[in-house]
Image (cartoon, rainbow, N blue to C red):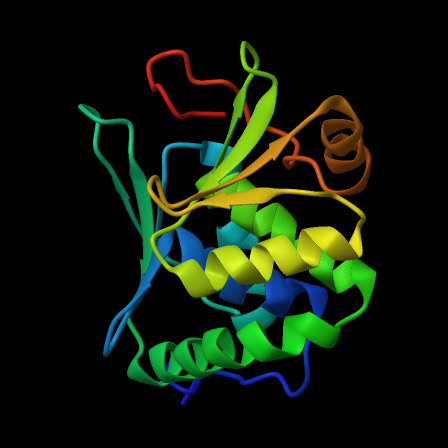
Length: 187
């Protein structure tokens, strides 16, 4: 039935890696829905575009004028089950993936969870899941980018000019990500 059966791609594509990662970081995967929240319209549009390409689905849109948070949601049990499974698989798959695929994962992480502090000259990524922080650190090492995990603040930190230059040249934030002066930890 069109609109009811969700196509499930076999194997990993760059689009599927990006989607699974975004839903892991700034998303929610519940029993019957996949939801993505962000203040940045370009990231919302990116996820929306990928969902259209991969699954041929259009979202329900929501915008909170007070907070600036945008939300897109997809309410399909079959999709939620599939994305949940792929998000779990991705944690293992990405460890041995090609560098181009690792870059997609890292870019999604830093787009969703990251910030740049220009005064202290560092890039941070916040995440309460220590397993994800260790995975991100290992993937950064594959790009010869040294980082440290601060367990107290649940973050990974990239500092020192050589590492920041490698981050800029090899990973970076996506186009359209900007500094939000109203948030202490915003890019």
